[in-house]
Length: 358
Image 1 (cartoon, rainbow, N blue to C red):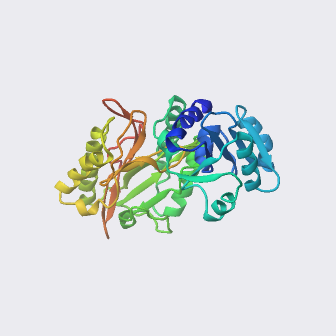
Image 2: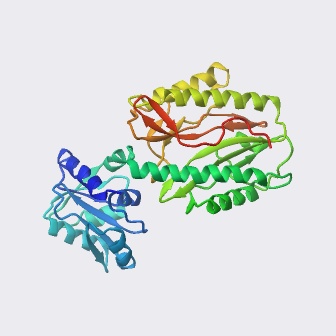
Image 3: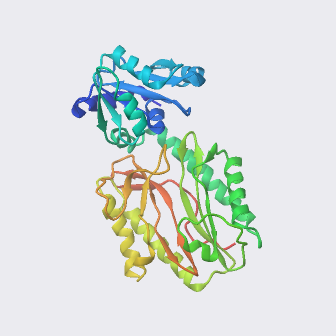
């Protein structure tokens, strides 16, 4: 990972924001700029690059020495606000931006008392840089998806009559860890039968029965990067209406995938998929957005939704995940991550999107 290059790109933006430096406190952004993976770390990035520093507490002195070798490091033993004041003084900065989504009011109140420093709110500058994945990030996302695909293959053998949603979720976690995941991207969604009508169903003791659809929304965490995939399969022959819905959702997903390319807005990508479902008379049953960016966080920009003005850049990785949900019957969602290219996109996953009947 070329963390220095990322910091240089950020530094070049700071004069336009009319700040001398930016205090980075959101941990995904700290990791993106420095490589630090611990639970407490901050970075002060200056417009000139001179005086930039990584800050953490004594628990992470040695870890940061290993993970952040190319940036000056400081460890605070008392409190962060005092070290922040020292870092600003050492760097001779007076107008310091802060991430509006990265600090609490309490911390802002503490930092705003720093002598000679004016705090300036800054929006999602780093998040915008993160939209475009570099080659190292794409490799890690490929790895996360490969683990997720392998887990999907493994979990199908665990579908037996009587297993509960909760137990299958545990089996799914174990399958991902066996395949090489360092953790879960998020709590897996496992929904049987009528429970699949809930887009974000929490696994319960509901037991699997013949004819149930099984909705699985899951992903592996790999090298700090997230995968996100949904498949809806069937345990025995499903109701004819749900088979029809699966065909509809598959067509809508393909329309969305076909619409994704550099320069397309999130609104237009969403619309391409949503139109297929609306034209079939089920528009009201598609109750969420088409997709979102994925990377160091499971939900990032750009967004693919009806009100999105986000323009997809080359190198972004986004999900395409339409769904149709019928209360009392069940639902279908099919989701894949895709990498945006100049003339289209690359589907990252390899698992079949056809209806699997176990």
